Amino acid sequence: KYISSQAKLVLFEILKLDGEEHLKHMICFLNFVFFGDTSRMPDEFQMLINLMGLTCYSALPQFYRQVVGNGGVKAILAFVRWWLDNDVHVQKLSLTSHLQNTSKEATCCRNDIEDWEGEESHLLLAVWSLAEMINHHMTDGLDIFTGQAVYGKEQFIKDIQDIFISTRSSGLTAYCSHLLSFFGCYGFPSKLGKKIMLALGDEDQCDMSFILRNGQSVNVHQVVLLARCPSLLPPEDLSDKGKTAESNGSSGRQATDKCQRTKKEVVLSAQVDEQALLKLLDYIYSGHLQAEGDLVRKLKMLAKRCNMHPLLQLLCNKRPMWASSMISFDLSHALGPAGHDLSDIVLEAKSTEDTRWTCSYCSFSMPHVHAHRVILSASCEYLRALFQSGMQESHSLTLKVPITWEALRKLVTWIYSHITPEPVSGCLWDNMDVEKKITELQPYIELCWLSEFWFLDDFENECLRVITSFLDSPELSVKVIQLAADFSQWILVNIAVKRIAPSYHTMRRSGTLDILDEGLVEMIRVASVRLCQE
Image: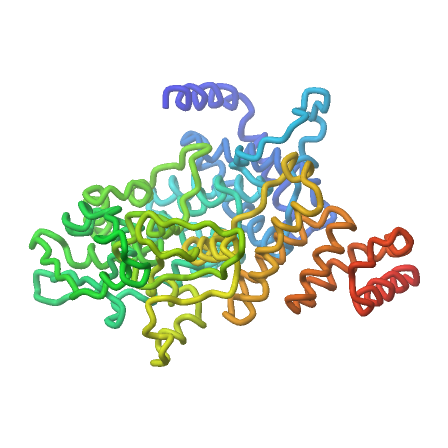
């Protein structure tokens, strides 16, 4: 805080001389969007510099009125609208190539360092600047959307939420959530949260209910509370975390069967505000909530008591910390030992000869995951239909999934977090031979096949993205074609065919294509001919 305050003081002293003229110049650069004059559009680097400058101005209370008075809000809103309409993405290296010193670059990559700004630095600065302006603007009781032709309030909120869901930048997600908090939208929207929210209040799969002071009850799921807000679980559940099966001889089916128990009832204190609790449950199940007025104050108290610090920071409109970790809707904690006692189904992988398996919770010898029907049902329409079908499989405590263990691990990770695990990259990937690389990619090909049957379109697209981004050699593409054809993944086959079409004649003479069926070789030949004719 001291460094920040001193930096603001120095910046203000510098800008006191001709700061307003400089501000007008920066806004003029951005007004090309608002006035529709694309012939005056500055290049990406100029845009970045001016957005950075405008963000600095917006953070200074002394210059806030000048920013608004000179059309800063209009310019930034128009820029956001233009950025989304044109689907702009700028590689950071293209912006800072003049600062790049290749002689000092590391010869080996580091994959554990997250780029907080991401590849959307322009949009991050625009959202950051808007957050600063709106913060000052609302303090004065003004509405920035009054008289705006570019944006209405509802559409703006929707667009910022969409940016949050689609971006991979931690910084942009942090400032999108900060910006939304000024409009009474608190939290971190996600596709998974939208699905899990549908389970709130569901009587079929709930295993606990809160009894409110008016006698009404709210059905909840202990596994969701465990992953999102364990403070709301009864003390006995917290003490049972990680408890193993009672008998070493129990199978995964028997261990899971322990969860077929009577629904618990938790009587809440009369001091707990009912409306605040229901809003908090909205946040727990969906990742975000809407609130205003006195309800926000009550939510602050409840969030503090429940140790929900990210939500509390948003409710207090606190600025995100630079380089802070990304907050996401993630239920993966329930897959650990703490969630085993709440498991009500076992997902069993296809066995392989080299599989050696031990489970710390049960003695079931096949590779498996202790999972939870409520999360599986919410994330996958196929599984929801299966569990509700009334068929024999719907009551079974074990579900056999026809994929290998490595593929099952990735599938379950995505179901519980909507995050797709990726293979190692950089030097580690480059130093692998082709056989090792295809071993890494095989689970994703299996998952593309399974996703078609389970109607997991988003996951299928993610797996396709991973596979295609790692096709770095013709030899690997040949292996992928062979394996993808075995799984009837013709979209992937066609992608790989196009990758090696330029090398067809060389690979044909070298015998690299001999492992493929004649029909697949013919596909590559046809693609090569088309490429020559273009």
